[in-house]
Amino acid sequence: MMMRRFGTIVMVLLLGVAISGCAASKKKGGSSVEVEDATIGSTTDSTASGLGADDTTAGEIIVVEGDSQGDLDDPLGQRVVYFDFDSANLTPEAQRIVEAHAQYLASNPGMAVVLEGHADERGTREYNLALGERRANSVSQIFQSLGVPADAIRTISYGEERPVSMGQDEGAWSLNRRVEILY
Image (tube, rainbow, N blue to C red):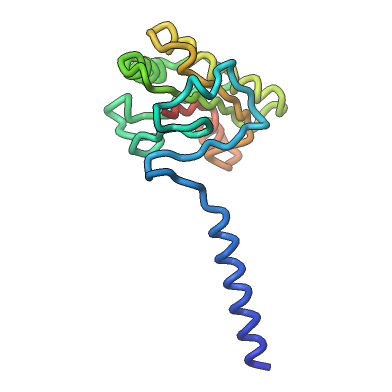
């Protein structure tokens, strides 16, 4: 009886380890991550062949070291810009960050960028997808006006589908109204 219980526990643990091993994301060389297909969002007309560096295949992006907030003094270290409620207009701080990234991308023509638009949970799913798209397009337009080629930019909207904060207050919602800038 004791041996049977022990065997069951071992099998459950092994199954858990096997399942968690299958869920790990595939990394290539430690410097890139695979981007999921976005059936929820929308993308620009950019083709996969126009994106990425020579050793980056379609569906992958290069991730520059650092977290999504980065160094608060260095606008290039900040990979997220935030928006006011129900707005796709950039704040002055967001404008500074976007301009710094645009200058960097314009001076590195082989680079490509993905702009992920997000919204908080208020509003319908369709409305939030459209709002996330407007936000990503707002950043894209500034990039293009500062010399980043349109074929190096891909926009996608996740609407309310990928919140970074699950709270039900203004503090949480303000963190979810964003565009993430991914190289």
